[in-house]
Length: 172
Image (cartoon, one colour):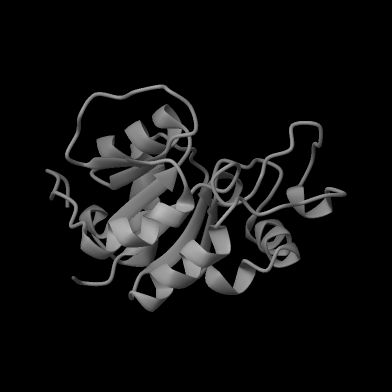
């Protein structure tokens, strides 16, 4: 497999989003990585994947996202950060994913989006021709789609991406 890019949503996919705090996560009194985030990122990198955070955080640009990631030891496991504040578009728009694809210099089919929001992360990615892995933490369901897989824990992700070759989409 040609090494691709694993794009991770930030809040509640890599980092716990504590609803009681506001402002940039880097300045919150408490930050926490989601269970198995460090192991999953590390294993993906050993498999040849590049990793990026893609977030709609309006309070945090790349610097603040990296500061928060550093507080839990994830900063060295993330190659790139794309924040809607810096990009100028938000997920689920195709423009957001097109911007990321262009910045990384790869076609959408070389990207896999991992996120917890079935609309913003998953449907947005697949509509843009990006494969997706839904980190589902409840009993919601989505229709079958060869561009999408579902996991219940980040610990499952490296095994899935080690063997999964996303379907090529019409764009890219």
